[in-house]
Amino acid sequence: MEEKRHRIASKREPGRRERLIERSLVMVRRVNELVEAIDQVEKMLEDCGALLNVSQPPISGKIGLRWWKMRGEQADREPVVVIWNRGRSRRFYPKRVEICGLGRKVKNGKGFALGGDITRDVVRVMVMGLKLRDGLLKSLMQLERAIRSGGVMGVGDQIEGWEVDVGYWRTVMGGRLDGRFEGG
Image (tube, rainbow, N blue to C red; front, side):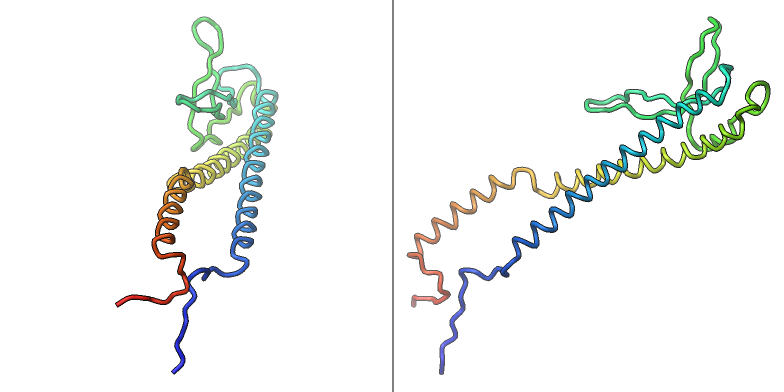
């Protein structure tokens, strides 16, 4: 009866490394597309803020978009919807408002009537842009979190330790990796 020999040394599929590299390149392209989409949405939001500034008179109740620095160590500036109000000192101050129901807060009376339709449309597009930006940023943060928690950071040290162990076991076994047991 013919003895079956099992080769242990390399069971990896040929071309696996190349396929993994190709998949990682596709992921890098997707991340670049995601970052580009975030940038485009932010530029559109800046335009919406400028349009809101032009389409409404400088009266209390004017809706605007400001970029405020948020709290946190690495916090960037975030778009915030505000309504401008006049204070006792006759100066305007911004008050942050939620985007939910923002279309109903567009003024129509007094000087607002002239640009009211444009303002309402700009607010609608701006709200959709803010929601899209939040979704894109959440996707990017989830990907970053998955990479960090997936053990990718610091995995090189772990692999080096395993390589030392495998090298030691190889020397103990005399370099035999042909799959035959020699012993009692």
